[in-house]
Image (cartoon, rainbow, N blue to C red; front, side, top):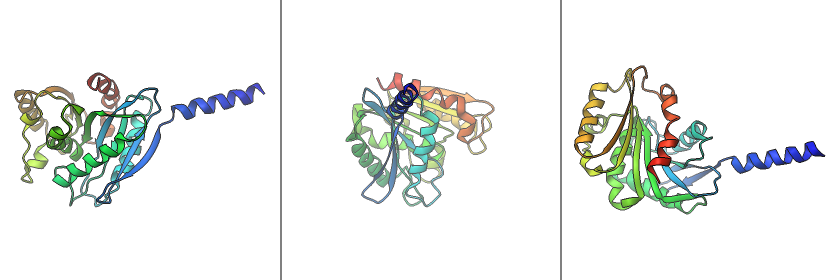
Length: 236
């Protein structure tokens, strides 16, 4: 009997601690993954923007949410929303801004989420997209937008496509930016240029440089582990 009770208690405790995964759908038909850890308090909402937007997959955010939930599953520091982008609708587009805003409003109606505390994050294309979308949506979200965190990103990927981004539009906001010294796509020289631009524009820059890291997130494991603590501090 004691073993049975212990088993039931263990199952109940695990169920309470297990995050809830959900799928959201936007009016344009694209999908987003939503991951909400169980908590006694409402959690801030981290929007995760995936990289590799060259794939024609308006549901790529579902896999991104599942992958990043594994990375941060034990933290219980935030809920995670992962929308999708694709070649015809990149992160740095008006329709993507509309889509992300729509998903945030949907997520804000879910139990356990405090959508008055929003952070934009992402890697590679998604990191650059986080910067553009923060600028595009800051006026709509005002004080709800608490900061940005990006990995292996370079805004030049947008600039080369004729998309302008002005760091001054994010003056006063925290920006945690991690770059790799062996990034095969983005040189540290250009990342350092943008760091200087961000600091001059008045962003609260928190730069991190891993001299041995390549482009992929697998090289930033220890740094990713620091992100939940940064969210707790930034989204208070």
